[in-house]
Length: 197
Image (cartoon, rainbow, N blue to C red):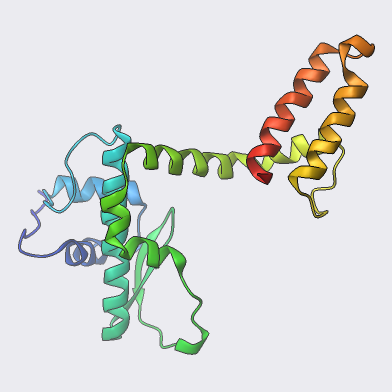
């Protein structure tokens, strides 16, 4: 039987206890499920299918993880590895603070205004941006190949538009081109506009 978490403890302390029980670490979803099973009152217990609930749960979890990591580092008691797919409590290792890289994600999650100000449209925009970046590598690469542009060359929207006009002129059905090819060119232009606007 799982023991319930003490509601008097903050979410960061709940996470320290749970991660201490998982020496191999775990993913975010698993951590959320364990928090829910143990009746943690610091996260919403609403369906994660609601995108706003999902965002708020994710944000609260990562806010607590970053606060815990800072606390453990100051105490020199442990190191918390926080990744998108894996979270793990590790032994403390002394390091050079001067070598620390600025962590913009830490700044984002520790700023509670980000949570308070995020509405449904903001969450939708964040998710759209995430999926565009996740799948965009292949999509963007294919569009650049269709436009016969070097992805390593410095590109801007003006250059892409110029190439688009050339391709439309070449492949327009009124000039003996293919409707299907023209549709592919238009789709590629849509994709590239998202990346280079």
